[in-house]
Image 1: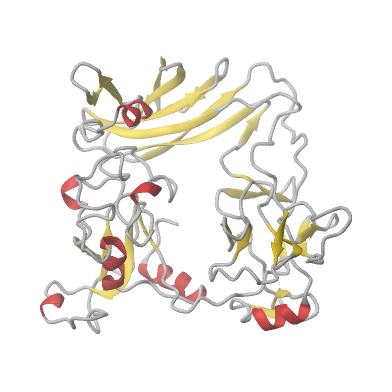
Image 2: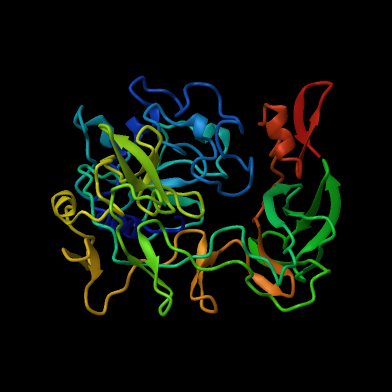
Length: 441
């Protein structure tokens, strides 16, 4: 989640029964008990460790640099996004702060911002560096994370939106072309974006993008230059020329997470926990069979996208999806009213617990959670559809291509130390085998 103000970040954390971390908590989580310079240790920043200095020119998934996590296992404590923390900012606060668990000044004009972003220069990556901003400040490269001192296990929602699994959208049996924004970067003072295309696809660009096509390491690539000295987002439409019929969703029936059943009238997913005893037919789809003290039991597993339902994570040791507090015995998706009443601590604000249905019902006039991140609601389908694909005509998809505001040339390649990473960024870089250096094309 990016582009949020301090108040919005704090409000979200409060809704999740937590709060923004204090500056001291954030720094300890980043540096570990040994006080490392960086989350991964003391080695100099490089594009193999984190997303910074225009290595990729865009934000990345939280776990994109999982091997560079902090000593406490936290991802992205350097690079990718700046992060709001709870404290008011005072330049000299730590000259007189308590030695243990300082919580910041009682008041101030600005709030503290920690970390670094995908645009940060290497000399500003150290975990001890502090920043600050007004509470109403927001930008594309600032986010947050929450601390939850005592995680509470809320009951499941009684209703969720149905969704179309990723990777099943086609157009009347005609495959949609593959098209993806591969990256953005600055060079010679201009802003560039690269788009990878499938063979045979045709494309049309907006008037504010000037694109050239090439084949790079076997991949068809468009390199587009955007407007000078400004950040801009323009569309590129990519089509499969063999398609002629109007777009359709073939074999893409709305589905629900494990523990929910689809209401064919409303196309919503209603909570419907199943018995935990193994039946003759085995466990239902989306459930795993585990052994608990010699008794075989069905437990919630991953959904049609191969992910745990929202709010859960997959525990390899338990062989199931579990809540944030790690309680594998929680009867999520399991019909056990007495255990549910004992286990759940209530519901999020705006919801009340139903003993009958073992789930959280929206208060009168309230709404249930919408689509998960990365998807949008498709009114024609009455379900959430993968957000990365936007049908634009017969056999066509539309991409939003953002080009950055570049004030001076930026070398995105010299900081890359491995040949593999250099080749992965081949839209801007090339590997020189003679001197073993990654350099700008």
